Image (cartoon, rainbow, N blue to C red):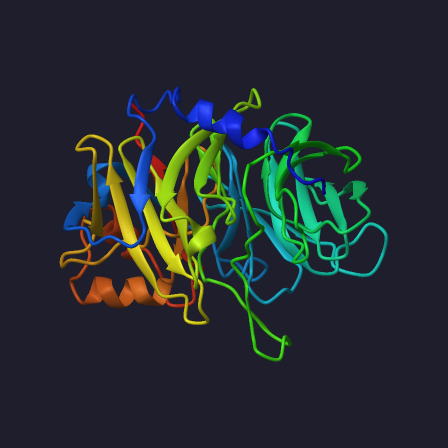
Length: 376
């Protein structure tokens, strides 16, 4: 991919002084990834809506709850064992369709690393590891194949608009731009998103013999944020938001520069709300030690944090680093039926989660927990 024009850093410095974000009237915030901050405790349900969806269990629908997409009417899920099964549920968790097009044929996938739902066009995009995306309708019928050439490895991927997917190039020798728009029809790169940086950095850690790589457990370089996307270029000292009209704006800055640190400490967003920015300062070592950070836009202050799920009787920390789904559902995770039954019998649950757990059996599919922006 092309390297960035040297004039762009000056342009973005000017932009930083006039940032406009419809979710905040605050100026661009700066996070010191080496500083010590006081703790703040939060209750998840005080600022987010939580929905629990038990996935229907049948002989054909034995699903481990790896959720790829949640639309208005459809949930797309798979197992973690690369069986090739793609499960479609409705928004109440009722089983709709099981698709399996795994194979070596021209209309089949070998091993996928991402599934994208375009509910408006009733299509799913299955990103195969063999440099192609297979497109199917919601009945599993093949529609088209999208291929690309060259050293490009789209990994993180979301439905950007009617014509494009927004992707991140995961190719390990990439020395240029990471983010791009990819045509849903033919795989053309319709736009490279130009983010200024000095020298290319990678979050991947190689073993000494260069035979093994280490990745952090949670890292989401593309994060839907209401109608926009927050893009984390590990080589840059600023996180940017990218809007449907293709405007790129500084979102969060960090100090000291990742270019000056050894090992580097990356600033990774975890969950973004209209008031709180949950982040992680992640050190680039094999252990990937991290510090959880929170910026409160109302108080205009930074904290370390602990967030709790109030559907448990005792304090149970809420996990806020799950794979973001879309602009309305920034976090999704699965809860094992057996764990919920145990906690229900132990008197550890209350409210909505208690009601759901009371209906479960040991061998049921997981319950999906959606963390949603509160509609105001």
